[in-house]
Image (cartoon, rainbow, N blue to C red; front, side, top):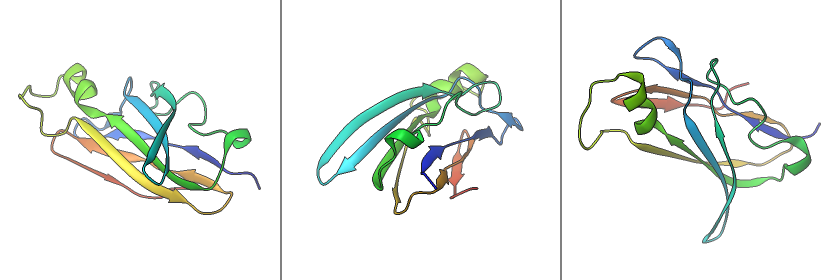
Length: 117
């Protein structure tokens, strides 16, 4: 089985997928951080393609950056300056070739994540 990475972002405050949320993927090697791609969630809160496709998959440490503040501003969440949640970094490891699904449950004042299926 080849490995790959996906996500799904849900707006738990509004009870809907988080459409139009910018996500960046980085590979972490020691003190080095390499940008691999930037994607945006679709109307279902997912990216149109795998964040890290099978043909590029390598085990190691990665970081997803979720640009929550820009999304929350556009979604009509109450304005605040500075926003409590703006940029959410999630650093995680992928130790074997498998499907890694890293969802984000988001509200203006909290978030959670887990290894999904």
